[in-house]
Image (cartoon, rainbow, N blue to C red; front, side):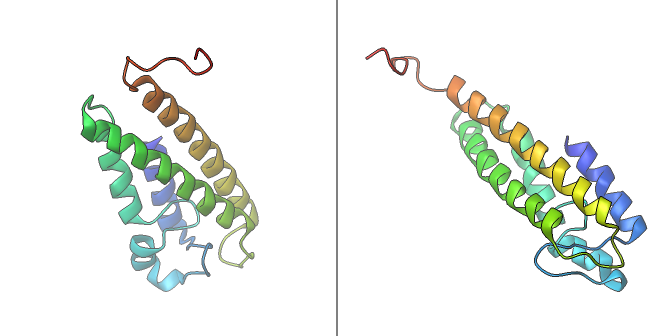
Length: 136
């Protein structure tokens, strides 16, 4: 999924589709907007870097991996909010409306998948001495 987001970022940069959520960006400064605010199809660069670090850290089976899973859950919630914001943002002549809708739908779906998988992995890591819910 991370590589899909990277490809979408490149597509947005080439097409000069600036960010739509939190105000509309400028085609003339698409690269600086990408670093701080993202594009129409990708989150800001700093969020992508954080996501990449978390993606590598969740594989660890220690406290660092568990903390990364918790951060992944928070990032999935932020991703869902941002994706919804992109889909519902006011249309501009620079970014086709279908791009906004598809980007928002992809982001929401990806956020849901990340949250479910992250929550399942976190559940799997719970201490083994705890009873199952409902067993008393």
